[in-house]
Length: 238
Image 1 (cartoon, rainbow, N blue to C red):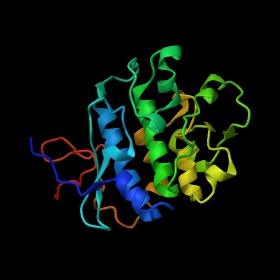
Image 2: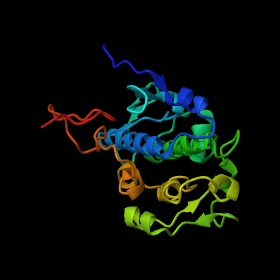
Image 3: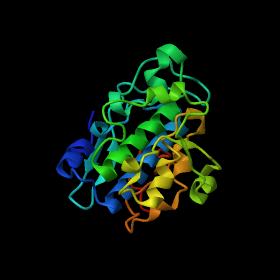
């Protein structure tokens, strides 16, 4: 098997930028990550282990593009089919995944979206949103959860009509995050997995296209010459 040579991964890059990555890079790489996830989900593949270590960067500084790797825990799953196996990695794991033994099978697509949200947060802030633990207690207390913040942003409503309860409720969590990116995170970091937007719906947010460099991006529906779009890779010249 011959694979592309990638220079580093996002975890190493974040460690070199402990106060957060420049927003244009976060915007571009997040767009590519969502495009890759949307493509996988469109062909019924659930990654189930999205984390900084599995997001690879290819190219020279300032021109890197994202490659989503490590499919060791991935699974096939048509919409509506639920996952019962424990998967994911610690702090990136969605609450319902951590409670799978107690609450039963979960939606793998929604679990991937939560993990993407954690990665977006770390990229822009240089730290994790919840310290050492995923807020699994919030899932148990989801109905009428005290302190949950309803997001009614026009961007969120335009993307999917959602009015979610974001878990990013504290000022400490929300500071230093651009308002347009908070709109995205408020539709991702939601306790109820049924309320999270899909990867393709997230790509409707204007924030993803604030970057001037769109040439290295590929939308999930952009086909390559052989009809297969490689997640995160640039489209073929026409």
